[in-house]
Length: 132
Image (cartoon, rainbow, N blue to C red; front, side, top):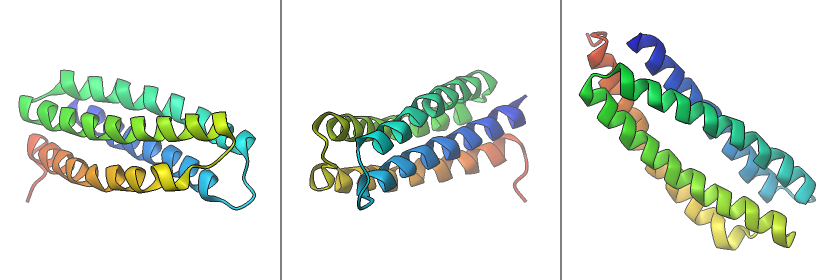
């Protein structure tokens, strides 16, 4: 059960990551417009739902150490997600990419989530006794 929960969580994390980078790429693409931004943004909704479901499975599967580190990852991904949501909504609403207003914050939050991703992977290996 733990292995499945951890694998699903990491896969959902990568899926959400890819969905948000697609939004950022669309917002930064020359000639891109609100219809493309909206289409990419819609994909993040399903990715977030999958991520949240997988996060809950880790909380149940445990052990406490993995659940705690999984919660840290969830918080980091949520912070990044919320910046992306604000950026995408502002861009779609205004018809402007708002790169100067959001891009640096988005990239900083993306970098900040790397530590929690690595910590979760390490904790999962320990919990699954796959560390050699």
